[in-house]
Amino acid sequence: MTNSSKPSVLVTGGAGYIGSHAVLALRDAGWNVAVIDNLTTGFRFAIPDDVTLYEGDIEDGALLARIFAEQGTGAIMHFAGSIIVPESVENPLKYYHNNTAKSRCLIEAAVKGGVKHFIFSSTAATYGVPETSPVTEDTPQKPINPYGWSKLMTEQMLGDTAFAHDLNFCALRYFNVAGADPQARTGQSTAGATHLIKVAVEAALGKRESVAVFGTDYDTPDGTGVRDYIHVSDLAAAHVLALEALIDQPDRSLTMNCGYGKGFSVLEVLDAVDRVTNRTITRKMEPRRAGDPASLISDPARIRSTLPWRPQHADLDTIIAHALQWERKLEEIRAK
Image (cartoon, rainbow, N blue to C red; front, side, top):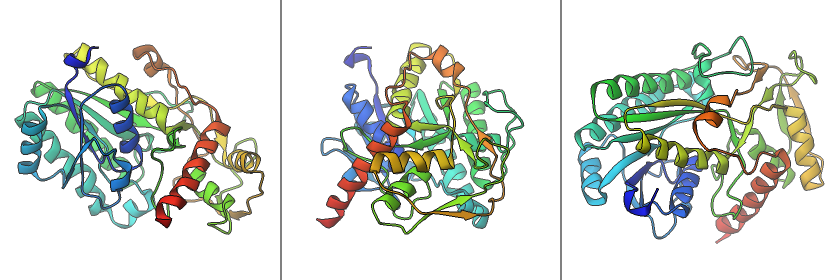
């Protein structure tokens, strides 16, 4: 695809963890990119200086209309939203507002503004606790928390809107996203993050006293939960390829899992962090958390057959090394 045939892309939540990596992937591939972010959880430093940032909210229809006009927006990558599962249980209305109602506003603005292509940041949480693993896209979607439901509702809205209007979409269901940009341009910057690899790297650097292991009696090889970890830069690359696929075939929409199809247990991840950092993290064994499946591994067959997606960082030690590199750089950024 030539640069002249590439539409301008608006990235919502582009100052956040995954969104900022998508901005870099688009920019590196020669796309014209702009960002809308209200900066409640995102960071201005995560956005390159040559990318336009609109500080605002995706439910502001007037602002979106102005952005579409100024940028000539032809595609949206939608990352903005709330992502903490336990918080969604405690405060469900926040999640139905931020993730579902605001997405509806964004989709409506896209239709009004003639935006043709929409990439949606969905999640494996829409599957709930699947009866079988690996998980295919045809696995029944039975969310067990408001976070999963809020994302599934947006998938439904996109499907219905694409049927009724001149818009196609791709919903990418992420498994466990980890790591950071290999050039340390951005990474997971949220204070108090709950991602295991982020937490473990912080512990290895002395920022946490220990790492909690929730559940040691699962039906897995070592009794701890098994998850499919995908490098955030590989995930960002999948978004760019998905957008190209939507543009090449505007009459189809796509739904695809994003994972490697290989799982690691909590203890295997912590052992890998010990290995990469040459330190020993203190493990604190805790009871299971409600709703955590024993194993959650993607079947990536569809994305591999649909897109020319070939992961470049599908190695646990590499993911950890990049997370560690970013954590050290983050210390420098915060010290300034």
